[in-house]
Structure formats: C-alpha cells, structure tokens
Image 1 (cartoon, rainbow, N blue to C red):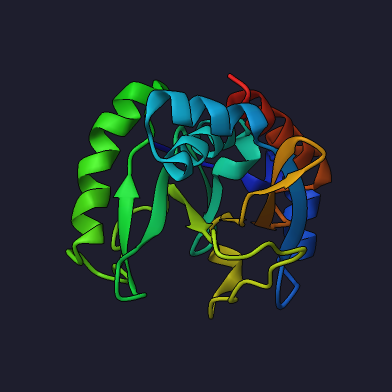
Image 2: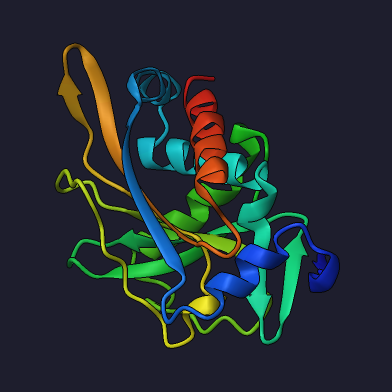
Length: 209
C-alpha cells in the first residue's frame, strides 16, 4: 500500500524542496561491512551468499521509513513495504532482471526466490523490464568480480524519481575477517546521513543474525 504525503506538513519538507531544485539530488556512499558471520552462516545453510545478504539488505531497508519514500510525478508517497529488483548474471555474461518480494523470514524468501533466480540464469525474462506499476522496490546489483572503493551509478532522465540503488562488491579477507564493499545511492531529499547510518546498523545486525 502507498500513502500520499502532505508535503506542507511533512517532517522532511525543507530537505525535499531544497534538493528538488538539484539537477542530480542523489547522494552516494561506499562503506565496507563485516560479512564474516554471514558468509559462514550462508555456507552452513547451503544457500547462495548473494541471496543471503540481499535478503538482509531488503529487510533492513524496510525498517527505515526514509528508504520507502518515492516521488511519483508531483506527489511524494510512502510505501508500507518495498521489494527487491535485481539483475541475475547468466553464463554468456549478460543478465536478466527479477523482482523478488519482501519476506521477513529467510526460509520463505529463499523458497520463493530460488526458482525465479534459476529461471533467470537460464536466460528467461528481460534484462530491463518496463515497470508499469508502483515504484515499491529497491535495486540491488551484485558485483562479485572486483573490490571497489566507490561507484558512480547511471542517473536516469528524471533523477528525482529514482529509487535507492545498492551495489555489493567482491568479498575479500583482511586480518581474519571477510569484508565486502557496499555502495548506496539514495535521493538526498528523502535520505540523510543519519538514515544511511541507521540502515547500515540494521544491515549489519541482519548479516550477523
């Protein structure tokens, strides 16, 4: 469900109106997260590590109200829940994109997600689906081939209507720990540094569950 926000009486009115004048209102942050326990847990469960941490990120994002705001036309709306849109790599180096619904329980999420992902790996589906419904999703890209210290994402023609974009990089070992770069790109009119910090805290807790 979606709730239309009364901008005049909204707590983020000033930030939203200020950044709405920017040609590019997106802010990007890259951090490294400790995925030692998460990597071990995924191996113990016999599940793809990427799906394990994408589920953790999806659940964490849903706990942060500001990550569920969207601008749709002239309206600002708040979704009560958002899902996951992600590209899946296939053998020839191309990819297919899939939409995976939010499930708080990891087992339920995997039960629904694994068949969809397997079909995408066989080349079924589209690389870029035209989304004619609500923008109730976040975009997560998995980039396991190299480690990065920053990411510049493509800016759409209407950047103010953009959705949160998370990019996950290659896992490496440092001093007995496994770390992974995570790049976040969000609309600064909706999300400030405080909310990014709150998300990262929730995400780390989900990784360590």
